[in-house]
Length: 503
Image 1 (tube, rainbow, N blue to C red):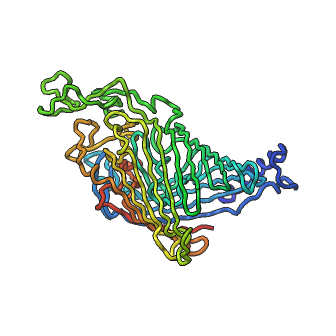
Image 2: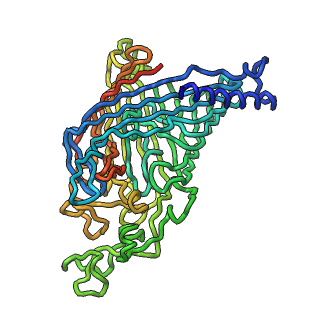
Image 3: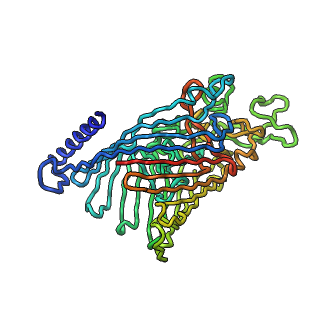
């Protein structure tokens, strides 16, 4: 009944839009009645059943809690309606829901175990898989411009199945890197909420996307990030891509994009933003390395006051910044005939990104350490699989790959760990040699997909990547792992298998 209601509503909407087109007389491609202007596609129904195991990793919001052999399971159903009006306006609307189980979550109280009924129950969340329209300008066969708006999956690298796609999925300040999401096997799609204008030239060999996405995944949300993504195919089998994103550059609330909080020991300040504030961290000109180093808890002028770093309240960090991206892909099959291989086999690809062009003191003073790099190859599957991909990522960041400070305090800075592994925001306690930093530089992922028959596909992924898992604490609240669940190279990994049915 719900499906019939959705379809009836969708048909009414499309009919109303079609009548509007007919009345305006714009873009009328065919003669006939108003109903001839609307082509309704059959309802698409997709269900996905995911199962796997976090073999080794860490789960926690504000601490590192080792875990192993945790079961990962999700089941989702999505209904999608599509209509094309006068061959120019393509409307797609999809809704559905997801059942998921939390990995063991952190406790809201230190004296309560994290293994509670809340962390074992099945959780459900309704959602929108997409809600967008695409309008084609000019020649319908070879349009120069198409305009897309709404909520829709966006992807600029067709080969990246898990890692990569840094330009829109990654942060700027701080430069966190992510993969997965609510859709654990998302093929590295970015769910874009905004507007996309595509320009196609040279028979499609030069593509330009002018984007205006609205930030919706990580704080501060609702800011607009004008972006450009281009690609060129200069010869067969060779593709180059490039792009830039002015992240958070159109700020909805500037005080959230560039917070001006300063260090404070006030109880409210400690609760709201950790007390450390957002002022620049700079070297202390009076620091004496031959004496005992102190932290911010020692007041200036007190005996023994000797911090290596202090705050400069004349400047504050910002989420706003420019990201750059470049990528390539090469297919040797364009030059050497290999009929035994599938169309995607042996493609070699890679991506580089700079997360923040401008330098800032302490956190962002070295561009070379804000450059994630991804390389990959589609291994020979000899037509037994549609794709069998291997990817590797290297990111030599000075800090753990964490979104704790943006989520917890709304600050464009990193949290880090001291020499005991405890979380700290005091730069005087930061230990750059902790394994959370030194052993979190490399990531890897194997990905496979096979369409068994029409409507039935099987996916598999084995990885140590940048996936963050949602969890539930002992009072039933939804919480997120602020660092990847697998963050120690050579130790942590997981596997997932998906069965997808679609009609």
